[in-house]
Amino acid sequence: MDELDEEIISSVDSGIIKSTALAKKLNAPLSTVHFRMKKLEKERIIKYYKGEIDWRRAGFGITAYVLVSVDTNLLKNMKYTQEMLRKELLSIIYVKEAYITTSEADLIVKVIAKDTTHFKEILLDYIQAKNGIVNTKTMIVLG
Image 1 (cartoon, rainbow, N blue to C red):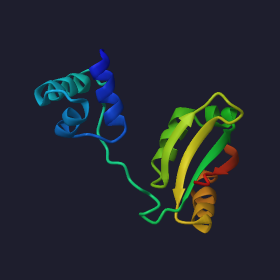
Image 2 (cartoon, helix red, strand yellow):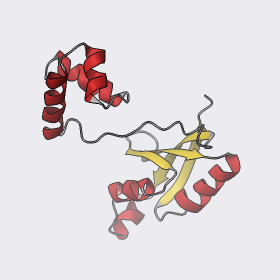
Image 3 (cartoon, rainbow, N blue to C red):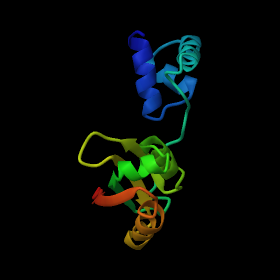
Image 4 (cartoon, rainbow, N blue to C red):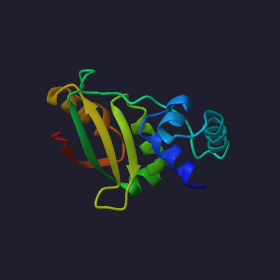
């Protein structure tokens, strides 16, 4: 991977997904950029393209990070793993990211909500209701 590849993946990560826009931004030939993007896709460095959504403009004014603690013994008894729980949390439409962590919490989950009442419903009805979750701590993003 050279500097052009790094610039391409950085640009794709920031939301520029069209070869023509990338070529113009990077001052590189369109054919070169297109070929490099295809190579990065084949190597699975670029896995997929997605649009960036302004969730606030879409009516979701709350972004929060939820630190989730789990009972690993209960999960084991249920023949369930933290990874399975993470994927289950990601299936909730309001959960945008979920990661297994090495901190005081077992998972960190990024949630969007319309308002605090909606967030409370998501937290109580969707997240805390999952088997194996024993505690949550919430951090609401202020800006």
